Amino acid sequence: DAADLARQSSLVWCSRSQPVSPAPLHPLLAGMATGSPPPHALSIWQTASVVCFDVDCTVCTKDSMDMIAEFVGADAAEVEKITNQAMDGVLSLEEALEKRMKIINPTPATIKSFHEAHPPESRLCPGITELIKSLHDRGVTVYLISGGFRELTLPVAEFLGIPFKCVFANRMLFQNDDTTLQPTVFAGFDYSQPTAHAGGKPKAIRGIRTNRPFETIVMIGDGITDLEAAEEEGGADLFIAYTGIISRSNVVAGASWVAKHFDELRTHLKKHRVAYVGSGAWACASARIAAQTCRESSLFETDIKMWVYDEKLQDGRMLTEVMNEKHENVKYLPGVDIGENIIACPDLIETIKDADILCICTPHQFVHRTCVQMQGSVKPGAIALSLTKGMRIRAEGPQLVSAMVRSKLSIDCSVLMGPNIAEEVAAEKLCEATIGYRQLESVRVLQKLFERPYFQVSCVADVEGCEMCGTLKNVVALSAGFVDGLGCGANTKAVIMRAGLAEMRRFAKSLYPSVRDDTLMEACGIADLIATCYGGRNRRVAMAYTKEQGKKSFAELEAELLNGQKLQGVLTSNEVQSVLVAKGWIPQFPLFAIVNDIVNGKAAPDVILKTSFKPK
Image 1 (cartoon, helix red, strand yellow):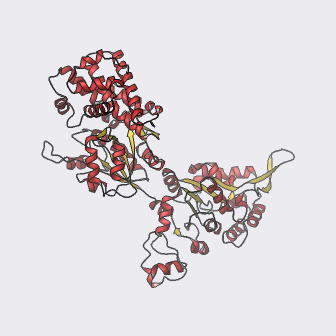
Image 2 (tube, helix red, strand yellow):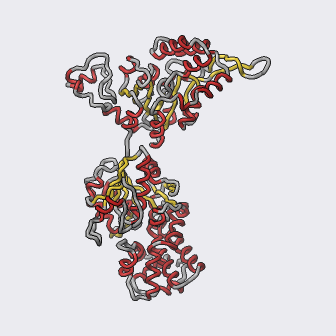
Image 3 (tube, helix red, strand yellow):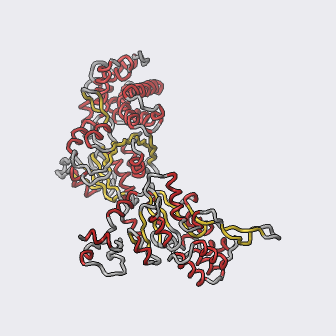
């Protein structure tokens, strides 16, 4: 069949519209040239953690030794002839190096003048800068492996942001002039470097594998030595022939993929599609951050779909319609342009079906039901990020939102928590957050999605600690609102916040012994507690409740003050109280216990001032 014919022939499938082959296509293969790389090559390319580039005629438009020969007035034509003989496999690498260097006879002063006359940016192939940036954005390590010399390659590496430790190239040797005692006379090159010999590039890649034995490596180049880097044992997993400068038939014939322009490779890099589940004030403010990144970074698809629980506004129009027209959530975050690349969608499944990253940001009491609806529709390999603070109480014990998402959707779920009052985040005031994660691959992408100059993101390998801080601080915020409503001063509020932080730590570690003390000192802990106790909605409603002296319930004040948003503190307080009762922990958590009595009308707010916060 066609597949067997493809394997048996020397045909090389290209990322262009036509295959590269000296012979005409077999009739069965003619219809297969679709402009896409072979599936196996694409899979390796999109999952590679290391990409190695040849330098001359791949990263740079010309061979650097040919250029410096021309620069010093040597026989450039002869140097170029020797270069091509080496790349075509006619001459050994050692012999080619020796012959060229004898003709060029460089000095340190010559090399310095050469770089001044030919700065790196003037020597690069079109698209290479953008491709390497895109690889770096994805956390891919880029190496330069050159049969040329470090002295000619390092300025190029520096311009491209490639560390010098990721450069394999030969070293020139100079001897000191007897009169000046300065290194001015070329004395050969260092034969100890792997690239000074035949088989040097495969050897360099085997060296890379010593420290990264299980990672996928791709080699890109134009010459026979680059092809060898993928053919030998322990070499690269994929060779891509770059023909934008020169196309060598023997190299093309052995390649798994041929690209004439680096944009072809960049186009086929994996892009992450982001979807948002939830559209409240914090969902919109945080999605606005992600939307900015998606407009700028090649790591993400530009558009973000946002699931909106659609509702009719006062003017009779639907919220999703207005959001897509004005790029503003006029009900929950009025006056803020969230970005034209955020697409409001009333259909949950339509929103999430193609997403690689699911950002879940709904009131926590709705997360379970929403996850059940999403079951069976989540893209395989997707990851989730919960921005929701709260827990679910079950007969077998409490369950955090991240655990619920992992259980229901069978995907990895990190959490983002911190002092994130939506209006301030939307106004791009300096803010910070913490991502709690389990899988390093997930957090690398998530941090890139949310990190902005005004929104600083740190990461901790402590999902439970991060999430418990974000959940419990809402209970402490209620107590802060009570003392503010009573007209108390800074000292009293400090007592409340200190006791609250202590109980947050004690409760979190009692349920999850793996919780780290350091996590409480991150943005998700002490910083979020401070912000919430001074400016959050829980504190505001609790203060109003205290001033009303029981004339209005929390439910009434929620409707009056929050414009349809949900008050999480009261629900969380009841959930925490259920755990305290079930485990007999009430004496150990006096602040949590008295807050729950107040929110349920069993005690007046001023009782908090008569409570001892020493655990029994």
